Image 1 (spheres, rainbow, N blue to C red):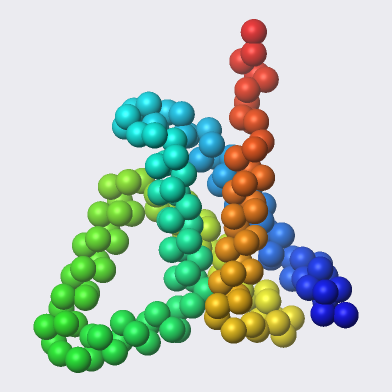
Image 2 (cartoon, rainbow, N blue to C red):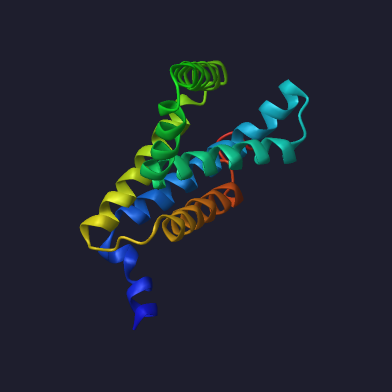
Length: 162
């Protein structure tokens, strides 16, 4: 019976399917951009995918376990004023450089919103797993969507075929 309940999650919580399709679109988008990005930067495609998947895992981690992470950061910041200043400046400067310089703000916001909506939908139906199983579940949905999206062909490839 628990297996049937687990298989019925996408029907009971449709935002999981939305999260999957957002991941499919992002995987296809990154697959299209991969050739241009690796050629322009002289980067190996393996490093490109490592960077993107680490980015995805950080977004899913931050959106899945915000209470645990914020509690730990708050404990560090509460130890002294110097630590508060150092942590705040570190987060603001590195986050700002990352999001603005690398032009990934839209991808992060879209994926983060989809993960938060999926968590909200799971909470709505009464499925509130512990933080780690929730992280594993949502990561599996996102990685599965990215793998499916990267396997799809370029959406406009047939328009320009000779």
